[in-house]
Amino acid sequence: MYQETTRSIAVTVKPTYLEDQSEPEENRFVWAYHIRIENQGADTVQLLNRHWRITDSLGRTQEVRGAGVVGEQPVLAPGESYEYSSGTPLATPSGIMVGSYEMEAKGGDRFNVAIPAFSLDSPYEQSNVH
Image 1: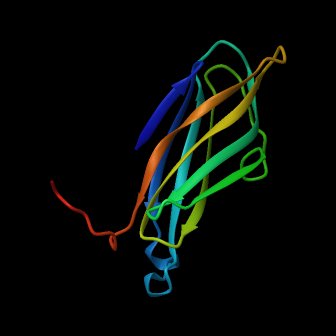
Image 2: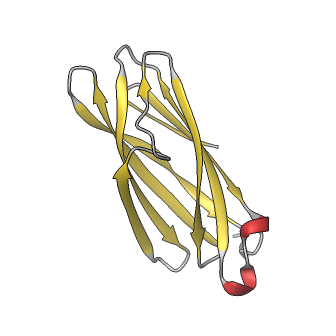
Image 3: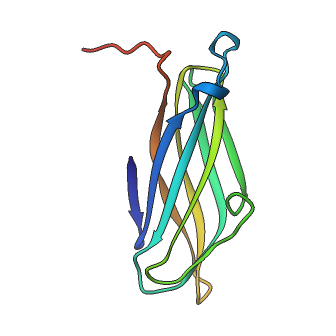
């Protein structure tokens, strides 16, 4: 698991390789990722937008921006959390994702919350021990 906290908003990510949806012989490797966003602060916040950078093992990067997550823009009061799952395909057997959420506090203050970088590793990736 990967975790990062920004301005009392903790983001935890757990990626999982999806063998049943992947087709290695077709250069299609698919991962799911489960995310938990927890408001550990004193202010109510709303997740407005997301931004992802997805990089495969050849260094090709795709950027994804959009409103909310999985069609929602959750509001988190102090102590509340929100969880969702999504996924991504890659043309290589490994990669990395990193991103941020744009949040808005109750008073209108907008700020970015870091999503920790996490690796996407399939059993088809050769690993080298140095």
